[in-house]
Amino acid sequence: MPDTETARLWFARARHAVVLTGSGVSAESSIPTFRDVKGDAGGDPDDDTTMQALWAEFDPQTLATPEAFDADPEMVTRWYDWRRLKCLGAQPNPGHLALAELQRRAIADGRRFTLLTQNVDGLHQRAGSTGVVELHGSIMQWRGVRTGVSADPPPGPFDTYPPTLPTGEPIRPSVVWFGEMLPERAIAAAFEALASCDLFVSVGTSAVVHPAAGFIHQARDAGARTIEINPDSTPISNITDLRLVGRSGEILPRLV
Ligand code: OAD
Image 1 (tube, rainbow, N blue to C red):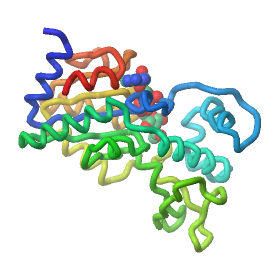
Image 2: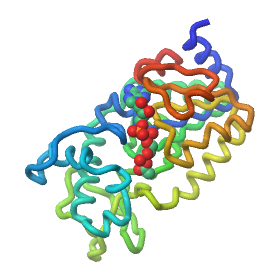
Image 3: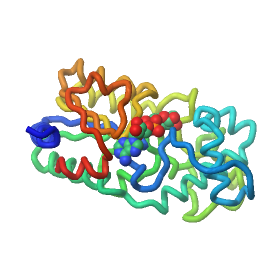
């Protein structure tokens, strides 16, 4: 039986499928993955290529930190706002849409389907997925750095960087930076789902950032079958039951 047919059957029969996604799922919506390198350094700070160059110049572990924000809140918030607007301008791709459809079918059939994502771009929700567990927060939500008061970003760019609450308190994106705790509710929801799943699927993630990198082991401990969908091999490729090598936007629609 071809591997995609096996995966399709596993999805159709799973009493509780848990899917973990990473930035590879949004790559086909033209949002660069975390470890992509693009652009050249230098130029006008308002220029798109310059913001893209920041992506190339800085290891995400350097830019996505509370230390980077403290050192240069203008640069960090300007960059995150550029990312936010890029995400708003992007459209869900066939991979996002297929995951939403797989969830709809599972629920209609009285089965569970949990989507865990490391992505902060909101594209799964826009594709129709529900109850999405956002492990690394959301770039669409911002909050006061001291009070945590939430602030709705405007449809276009902020007026100032760092943007502020009416009280003058700077705001930051509600994403998880390196060295910060994951949202407690998201992590609890993920562990609960993993403990009761019978199918675990890792899509478009390099599977190197914890705790998501360890989810496959929790799923295996629960007795789940495992699938990886990725054009490249990752640290978990050797332990998955089934490996579908290719782009998520092409493979996922074939599993519906
Ligand atoms: P990475 O950039 O580490 O990995 C993206 C993965 O997607 C790679 O394994 C690629 O091979 C794969 N990929 C690329 N194009 C693909 C496609 N069209 N279809 C399927 N897969 C594709 O991104 P993440 O694994 O999401 O954390 O990174 C995880 C976390 O590390 C991020 O959430 C972020 C980062 O540093 C924080 O910011 C806390």
